[in-house]
Amino acid sequence: MRRATGGGTTDAGGFGATVCTTIRALTELRRVLAPGARIVVHTVAPNPPASVVPPPVARRMRLYSDDELRALFGDAGFTEPNLARLGAAFQLVTASR
Image (cartoon, rainbow, N blue to C red; front, top):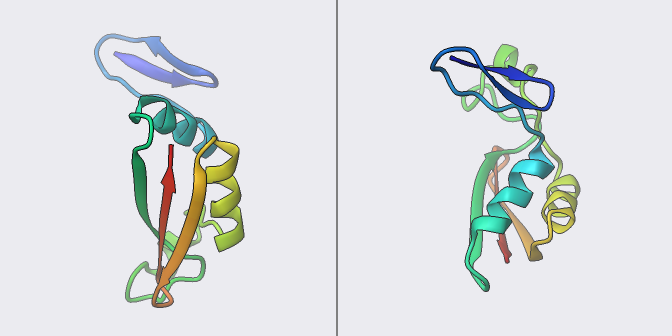
């Protein structure tokens, strides 16, 4: 099993889990994408309607503003990060490697 620790995983007998930050995850996605490839991410926007995400669940989620998402993709090394709102509930981010 592998148990999550502050910096990654440790061997604990068969279960794999990795603890990472959003920027680390995006940086890894960029690393494995082919040069010139595009990424598309569909996510829940801040303050989603209760019909999309019930308030008790939304309070436990980390939801990023439009500007924060653009900055995260830029900081991870993606170029041309574009964000579109899909109604009040969703965000669609596209960017190039």
